[in-house]
Image (tube, rainbow over all chains, first blue to last red; front, side, top):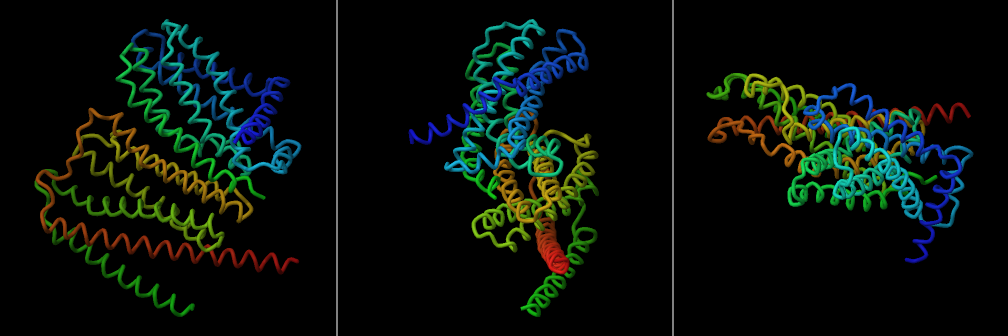
Length: 224
Length: 226
């Protein structure tokens, strides 16, 4: 068990190191997510009451689309110089590769969220310290990463690789998006914990189901 | 072997034709008009069987996707693929017949009710399934990807339904009939469900046959080229 964890960590660390040197993924996703925030603010106007209504939607649109972009990058970088083949030659279980890539994607998207969420809260004049929002973001990002990592491995092996991931990912991610938007709205409205519990439960159930399923089927996606 | 299949297909075709004629007669002549919603309610006898058959189709895709990943026989994948195709066609019809009924009865074409939203998400998921399959050149790889999406997509259905149900708690539950179905209505519905189920099986068999013939031709062409 400990050995498996070390292997996952090795793959994860490889991605983190590559990202530290190029800063490609986090930077591009961050700029993109920021642009989504800004464009949506233009699209919906800046009236305070309108913003309150659409704010959770704006945040989650930015994080969802940013996430899709990020998951794609994480696997496309493996496509260059046949690095994926190299990774497959590692004497590890395919599930280990999945978890390593998952940990990388999760960290990148979380890093983006850590930067854009405060900006979003500032733009909307909301309190900056919302620990419950942080919890929602961590859980929902985990769900996104679980599905996103699996499907980006599918998408990069198709002809229309850039468009395939959002087409595959978004319908499956609907429950997480709905639950995250609802929970965020409740947090912003300052409602008690009990109200948002059911939404957190949905996200947690989604996370568990897809982490298990993806771990099981990932080997079929990358075999050859 | 081939002869047996022809017999089976002909029997299915005859059965489907008889059931479909019976269904049409019952929907347009036999069954009385529902008194609250009027004539438009008759579309229900197509809408519900289509919805049922499309769920069946995606369930078949799910089962045969698992079978394919387990046994790796091309025939299982061919059935899964064919069933998904028919499922998408049926879901498209569900999404068309639904609003036609909803507009005069609910006053709106569309509402984000759990059933409607789940059908829409399901439709989008299996469109993605078909797209991935057509964007993969190598057949074995397409089969593997298809199987993975067929499994992952089907598992999403109950989660989507549950989520949307909670999301739209203020929405009144759908009442198609006040006081339930009368016997002639139930009879008509059952005949229609049978007719569309046979139609689904027929179309899936045809589509699967076509796919295996296509694969054979591809195989022959590549051996000829060598």
